[in-house]
Structure formats: structure tokens, C-alpha cells
Amino acid sequence: MKKLSLLLAALMIFCCFALASCGEEETTSSTAPEASSTAPATSSEAPVSSEAPAESSEPEESSEEELPLVGEAKMFWVTHFGDSAVEGAGSIFTAPYTGAGWWLHVAFAPVTVEGAESVYEIVAITNGLGDGLATPLEIPEGGFVWAINTGNDYISLGMGDTDFTSPNCNGMVADAKLWMVGDKMQILGVDLEGQTIPTSTEDVIYYDDAYVCTATWAPIND
Image (cartoon, rainbow, N blue to C red; front, side, top):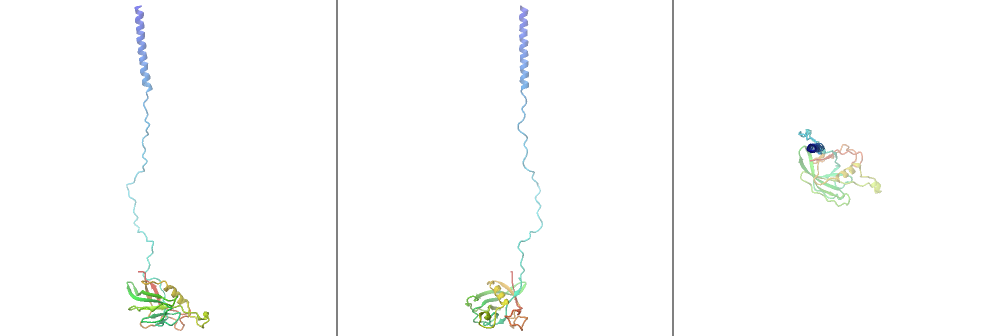
């Protein structure tokens, strides 16, 4: 009986030991190492070049074209000197004058512009072409007053057999209406001292379409 008790006790101790060993293995095997849930960070920034952008060595072209000092020359309508009674004419005055109420008057004073000769500046304007209320201008020192009128077509008016209008005069009037005080221009072919009429067609009447005036004016772009 004593042996049986010892055998049972030994058996119980073995069973307890076996159960303890199985529990340790289960605990060890059920615990797996945790995997990292954080993926390695990827940089979204592009690499920055350490080199500065190359600068163009070519100069920038200006969008504005530089104008020449002396502009395009055009005919300067001069058909008389000192006459304020003619029609369809361009007359130059170098001394005080009267009348010419239906004329466009422009006073020119000489000025110096480097790189250009015979330059004048407009110092006064009075226009009576539309209302006949123009008054004579004072003659600038060393300069002159130029005046123009369109004249009448007496044939169309039924008042005579002369047409004083001409394309030359009408074109000059259109140009002169655009002039302003302060404008400078080069005037060539005008003989202020000898007062020779500037024309290459002396035998042609000035209001004829075939008449040629050789005096010119050109704007100064300074």
C-alpha cells in the first residue's frame, strides 16, 4: 500500500511538470514579433540644382524704332512774297503786313539744332480759313511769317472764269492745320533776302496743277 501511494505521488508530480512545460511552449510560440507598420519615408522634394540659370549675353532690342533727326521732306507752298491779296497762294512776309483775314498764318523763328541746318520753330499761329477772323502776326527776329489760303473756284461759283484752287495748295493746307506752336522743322529752298520764288516752272501759273514749287519742309524729331 505504501508503494502504491509513492507511485501515485510520483505520477502526479510528472503530470504537473509536463503540463508546465507545455504551457511555456504555447506562450512562446503564440507571441510573434510585430512588423513595423510604418513604411520608410520617401522624399517628395525634387533635387535642387546648385547651378544658377545662365544669363543671356545678348542685349534686349528696343520695341521703339528711333526716328531720324530730320523727317521726311514735303513741299512747302511758297508762291509769293509780301502779298496778302492773292488767292490759292502761299505768301512769305519778312516785314509787317495787313489784311489776310481768310488766311492761315504761321510765324517761324530760327533756332539751332545740332546736325540740321535751316531749322525754324513755330512761335505763333492764327487761323482764319473758316471764319475770316485771322489777324497778322508779328515777324520774329531773323524769321518770317508764312500765310496760306485755299482760294475760290469762281468757275463753279458762276462768278468768273478762274479757278484758284489746286491740289498743291490744298495738300499744304492739310499739313499746316496739323502744326502746333513749338514744332520745329527744317525749311529749305526759301530765299528770304533775294525773295526769289522757289519754282522750276516759271512759265506756269501757280494755281495750275502743273506748277512745281521747289521749297521743302521736314519735321525735326529732337
